Length: 137
Image 1 (cartoon, rainbow, N blue to C red):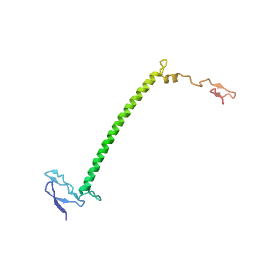
Image 2 (cartoon, rainbow, N blue to C red):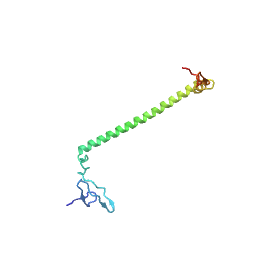
Image 3 (cartoon, one colour):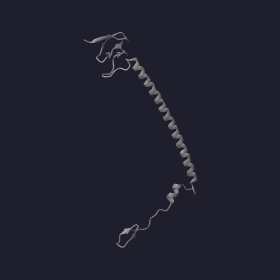
Image 4 (tube, helix red, strand yellow):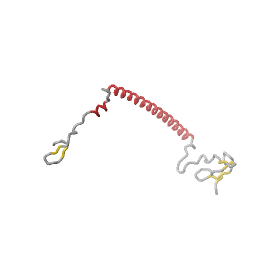
């Protein structure tokens, strides 16, 4: 035989399910917001909101977590600003050094490109008639 209780929100007779929840019901076409009893909890778990001491402890932990998360976000924000400021300073220093390194209108990389490379000699034939690149062991 089903267990019936009176809904505290709408006053209707509703069926109580085995897990402590109340069967979904409607008030004039709209769903009633009351779906759980004080003893209802997930299957195999106890309801922390039923005991006032546990509820207070849970609320304190949540408040502490919110404070810690806000502090972590603030630290991350400051760290990001500091990294950006340091990157700008590094870029300014690099630009300043590149201006100093200009000699005869060439930057350091241009001077490297212009520098004569080793080797590049002609292909010689050696005694066996095989070509080499001018390197002898």
